Image (cartoon, rainbow, N blue to C red; front, top):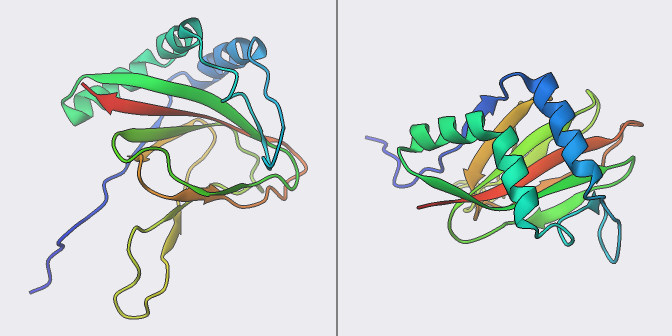
Amino acid sequence: MKQNLFEVPFWHMKVANFEKKKSQLIDLLEDYPEEKSGVQKFYTNRQVVKEKDYYEKFVSIMSEEINHFAKTLKSDLEVVDVWSVSYETGDYQTPHSHNSTGISAVLYLDLPSDSPVTTYIQPWPDIKSNDTIQLSVDVKEGDIFFVPSFILHFSSPNESMKTKRIISWDIKEL
């Protein structure tokens, strides 16, 4: 009898009143411009955004979704980091994870139909082939995808002529 020894949970939700919240988030991000520097293959504001005010405004805009997710987990949550990333044509993100504990979220703020979504890498190889298993999730603009922070993930090069933009954040349970 086959049973699973381990499994990796994930959560997928749509942002309520997305167009209104998208406008509010874009207004917020105008005060925290993204930069492309060093070996980065994308634009981000992660290195410059450490202000408590930014976190509080983000949590205020996204409180409905964060509270819904907290109820789903039956736990109190704290957003511990939040940043945006924009991928212009050709930009990509190499495989990485965030932390060994907690949950990471990605909100697809601008997602052109021909741009890639996040690809997640299974933490162990296939038992028959020893291949690395990768999964790209079916998301649309206005969706949030939550995974354990230790899961490796990446974004393939954006082949769209339009910019793909996400907001990502890390959460810890209290």
